[in-house]
Image (cartoon, rainbow, N blue to C red; front, side):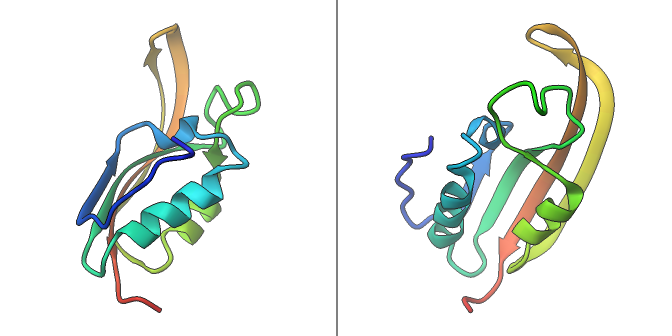
Length: 109
């Protein structure tokens, strides 16, 4: 996904996929998403939190609440919900920490 080409889009939907981006490539991917959205366009998806069970164990991207708020700058936040819970993954029991996001891009700066 790091090499993804994004056309101008009114909606970018990334359900539980962006955390699988390599940490060194995430800033460029997020910039591509931002550039692809016109004012009024939306991003919807999830980011994994830094207290997720996989943080520090897997070569994935994890964010603190502060980092998520920083990524949301330049957007009108329609939803920013943090979830911390015990649940399941494809491997079995898992401690989840993630952020649900629905963001509307505001005017270009």
